[in-house]
Image (cartoon, rainbow, N blue to C red; front, top):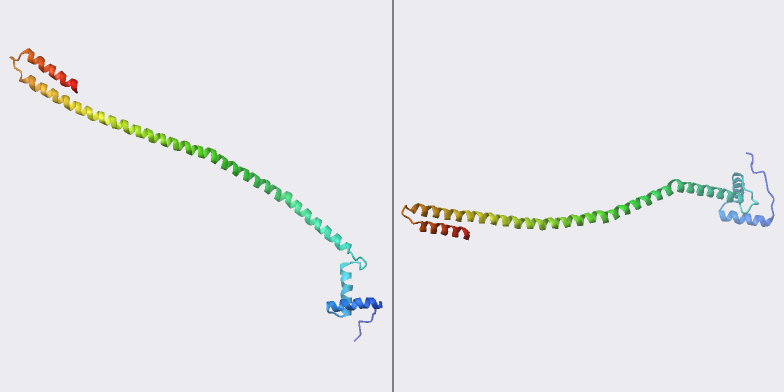
Length: 183
């Protein structure tokens, strides 16, 4: 078998010491760390001289600006209209509550006052009906008394004969009139 490890790199002892520390820290051989370093720089296309990694910063900044732009678009398209709509809904709810508190409660007070007025009128109507009933009873009583006076008059009148004096007839009429006046 042919050995594929035929290349060598020369570097100072100070770099070798740093390289040794890195390999020990990562728990790998120097050869593995070197191969991984070459793969890293090859894939990421980073320049090892650039310690601040401007390419990474620019990429992150570009992504950050894209996210901010996306959030701003979402804010204008969704959040602002949603907030405006919620404010309108809140205002309409306040108006409904205000109208309820004024109109409906005033209406309820009016209805209650009307009920009290109707109850008072109902009481007066009941008194009036009672008075009418009493009047009706008194009319019935008056009719009965009048009928009694009339019957008494008729009986006494029939008891008169041809010989009854005019004075007795006059006394009977005066007595009947007096009884009717007392009704």
